[in-house]
Amino acid sequence: MSIYSHKFTLADGRKIQMSEYENKSILIVNTASACGFTNQYNALQSLYEKYEPMGFVVLAFPCNQFGEQEKGSDAEIIDFCQTNYNTTFPIASKISVNGPTTHPVYAHLKKHQPGLLGSEGIKWNFTKFLVDKTGQVVNRYSPQTKPESIEQDIIKSLNL
Image (cartoon, rainbow, N blue to C red):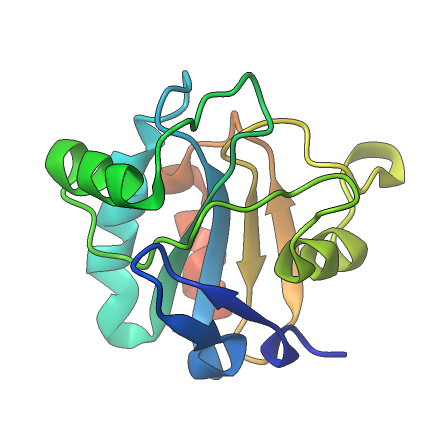
């Protein structure tokens, strides 16, 4: 099964098929508004603005599973991100990334790019996955990995 066979809901309620991002490089991030890593939204937005014309997209998936750091409603999350970080990339409706209610997109990502020692679990907010233009999950980055430090991997995934 390809990542393109999955679907999700944007925070504004629109249903999206991952196939809409076919032939694009995608950086998928589980996010939270009250996390020590929340300022990564700035770098995520910068990367999106720089590479979006070349076929790159950032997809944010808010999640409240880590320290309850994303308590807001979908509308509150969008407002927070746009007001504080001027985000323009797609933000999904809040999901679970671990456990029995893991969203199918995240089940796919974790299966195809496990973490340290083969663990599939997401450890914290702002874990990042890079998907290349063919739909392959090519890398997984820890929350501590700054988005700007993976710019070369993004360029490579775009075949630039």
